[in-house]
Image: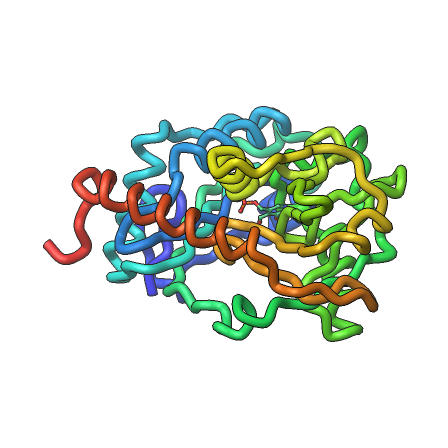
Length: 294
Ligand code: PLP
């Protein structure tokens, strides 16, 4: 397998980063996760825009323009002959002496990892997955804003450990005020009284690219959307629940803690519409993306 490291592709065994990299020492860096369908990176421009927003929020200059980054991503996919894949773009503060001062690092470390896409079990989409509400709260946005998709993921990992302890697939975190925030790697949606509800960005969440697409698709299809502040009781009394992210798309939920839910029509409809959107995007962009099979 080949990894893109800084300015070139290297075999994965040679893809090594210094122990003095501030990404390793302090979680000082940012990343994006994207899904590749039929050789096309879905919504790459939106992901690059969010990568730059994260970079700007931590005062990091990415030493590459968008065309260079897209080139690196497609070079990595082609080197590995991956057509349906998962891509992770990481930019850390880089190598520097020990110490928090970002100026200790002269050059960010830039990494593209691609992996063949491993589909989630079909049963997840058919029967739904299990969620818990975690005891650990989402980072306070005034402390470490969840809109920064940072390499420091311990907050989410602590919630994931809680989910694993109870055999749940995902944990939803509340914010410091006790309102729903988001999953460890996902955004949360639920339907109540025919309204599609999801925590607003003000609740302290990452504004998922899938979340934005899904709310837009809901509105286009005549579904009323409410982005607001919700207590867990609101979620418990929903008629259906689902979560979203770039790799799982729209995943139905069959239980949150001890409360059970039916797989609802809204998630099914939106997943169909989502996949139509993906197909249209792939058809449109296919000519632009270098073919893996030339
Ligand atoms: N929230 C968090 C904390 C995440 O890590 C992710 C994705 O990894 C999401 C939400 C969903 O974001 P997206 O839809 O852009 O993949």
